[in-house]
Image (cartoon, rainbow, N blue to C red; front, side, top):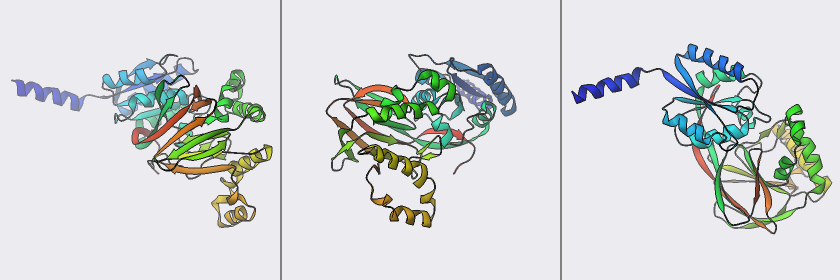
Length: 339
């Protein structure tokens, strides 16, 4: 009798319809349109009605993601900006349950770099239910606060110590609501003149320690930014490595050379042999305003005053040190096609 009961239970599991969970930021607009799109996708893909969870200020996604896993769902959809996606990913990391993305935010950098539609929620929902699964890396940031306490956070896009974090902290929220990521340009123009370089000790893969005088250190999982900016042209989201970028301009001219590098050289000139020759002839390969390196882990120790820290476009206060490491292929994401 026991064996027969176990068999019936296994058959029920095998034949039950798939079910998704949708985790939404309730402050975003368009949620009724999102519900209708989800219902249509459920019907097309023969899914049971989805479970719905809302994020809160105290828990922007990790708790709801874990609740969804405990409910036994087959797919989790994060509807929100990069902050919501990052928090949901923290709850799904190493679970094997795929994450679907419906971008409803300002930057949506993670979705953009994966080819997810950022201006069409209906298409994004279709992709979440019917796309293919891609395993991507997750970065782990272990940080130390000025009071000595430690924390661990997940990063999917890019984290930074220095001026980039100060820029994000000084972004006008009303301007950000009206013009999106362009508000960061305004904040950057205001932050650069007031920025002060600082000294940082960094060590990649436990190797020799290097000391630098920088305006910012970025630790990235991907390299493309809005506005046709190719910050890290060789970054791959599934290569098991993180990319380290040191920005160390000496003056305003140094910032202009950095802008030329990421907006022109990386995106255009470096794509052709003639362009690369031009970069060499104009001294681009010898300049030190922006320095790239790569590894599986990196330790950063700020020398002097604590510095502002950001993860995926969100301010995380000040830090004295941060250690980043890679959790390879730790997150499964629904995409249109595999590279």
